[in-house]
Image (cartoon, rainbow, N blue to C red; front, side):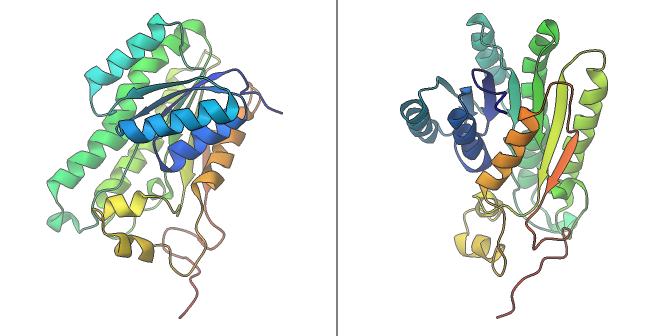
Length: 258
């Protein structure tokens, strides 16, 4: 059953990867969209594609979730236009660097903490009060298997995703007494620009992350998110972990031998 047709869905980090895949999936299901991302040109191209291909409305804004003032301005514009989202997909996130804690780059740490944790908080703090006021809404946070098990040199990234997991649980407690749902979808290996960003543009190193097995695609994760969002309003998936079949945990991946 399609329960998102005609609803308004806000997606952060919508210009690529899981965010763009979700935008395409929800547009195909007839949802109207608010798309936020840092890269204006990519966002504009995606908006045109969705409006022409599916006839849905796509409201676009260049928003860096780390910028609280920009988040608040964009939210105020939505509220003024009576366009409070029915669904908030906190998708914006990244890994930056892979190093032992005593060798890590504090700039990488700031980038991850400011995006993965503070960015999610900025957007949720701006949008959620309006959902609470009208007693309707669904917040979906994109976590990670890195929020369930640490791995070598993941340290700060792991910490941010453990934090997202804790925030999802805390948000659920905070909206008790309302019909608002809060969910987390936690992917394992997904082949997107994620590793290229982590390795600061080193495409060869990024490709090596996914060699020898079939990782998830952004569309696979979008399917899982669509399942979570499409459930009846009395049903809430608090945490959904999705991994490729080859991945058994963050350490054990069935890779083909050369």
